[in-house]
Amino acid sequence: MSKKIPQPTTPPRERAFLVGAEIYGQKHPLPLEDSLSELALLSDTAGLEVVGELTQKLDRPYVETYIGPGKVDELKALAEETLAEVVIFDDELSPRHQRELEKALGKNVRVLDRTALILDIFAQHAHTREGMLQVELAQYEYYLPRLTRAWSHLERQAGGGGGRAGSTGGVGLRGPGETQLEVDRRGIRTRIAHLKRELEKVEAHRMRYRAQRKRSRVPTVALVGYTNAGKSTLLNKLAKSEVYVANQLFATLDPTTRRVDLPGNNLALFTDTVGFIQKLPTTLVEAFHATLEEIAEADLLLHVVDISHPNALNQFQAVQETLDEIDAGHIPVITALNKADRLKNPEAAREILKSFPKAIAISALKGTGISDLLQLVKEELYESYAPIHVRLPYQQGALISLFHELGHVERVEHERGGVVMQGRIPGRLVAQFVPWKFKGNHSEKTQPGLEEKEV
Image (cartoon, rainbow, N blue to C red; front, side, top):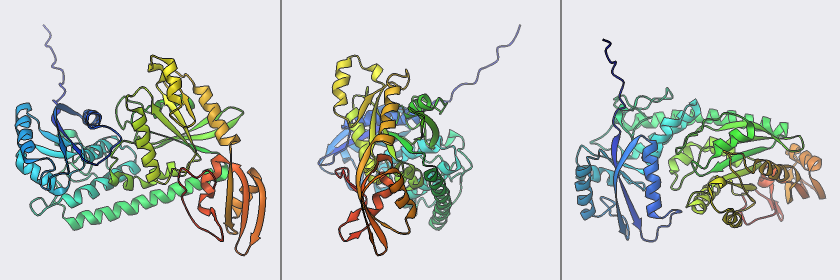
């Protein structure tokens, strides 16, 4: 009689309780209820089981505990009742908030905020050396001000680019570490300085790579959009490739570039970038500066929107705000309204198109609308011309030649130190000329807003 071999069991997930506050006068892209739903998805992606949520409306956050004393007592009771091991706030907490809340809730309950949760997810999904460096830097900069005399070390020290350790330590400090190690403030600052130097090397490599791409004159298209909008699925369809796809938030972290054939024997390089989200932590935007430059340097942005999502327009606006924040607001945009196959009313889809700039309805999964999308990209890159008026220093000979070669020159005026040029150039080249926008008797490096149609 054969013995039954015991099968490995999945360890139980940590139980998380969510807390959200609606602060009078503060505006966010998503209503509180939807923001908490998104926080629940983030928690699930991080490997947590959500066991409840609590909300409060406030004129302003309480100095000590963010939410009111009565709500803290209620939260403690609910956490005990649901056996919650971690409490997650939907907004970023100050070091004092976190310290006082942990004191009030007891030593068996950890307190995290949305920023710490997103940092943890990024730590799980970073696979390249660059990605791991960026996440580690963001985590150290986030946790440094949260060190106190009573807690003068990171509970779990950072991996230093060696990959993620096991998940036994729980959510919140994975990435910069899961091995006990005393790290004082000076040590952390030294590590931060080292990480920044390493990322500067990465940035220098990216700059050389971008310069090489520009010399090849192959235009670049950056896929941007809210997390889980379907960018990776779309890139797979366009390039006939196999970029990793998963139905979860931030499945793709490291940028991936693929060559795509456009109609008329034209080419373009499409780059899949990290998904955006409302309340994107500032530490992440700063740490991912080199990666986000891939977006800011693109010739065209392909903004992928999950049109089947009830908050599609709010998500679109959240992405636009982030694009403005990273100085990419001046780049031409095409909007791909993805997952259109999930809409029950095709007529409603046509009405929705009117709410988005240069929009086309597609289904990346089923391939619907892909040929029309590629045609639109080709027209924007190779057939759309933008008016331009710049003063180029003679040292910028490559740009002067590019204007003559690919643009329509209407006026040229040679001056001491440079040449004033006016005419029209392909839309994909606009970003390269933006720093030399003509300003009357002088030119200066500038980043025009969305309202400016002429460079």
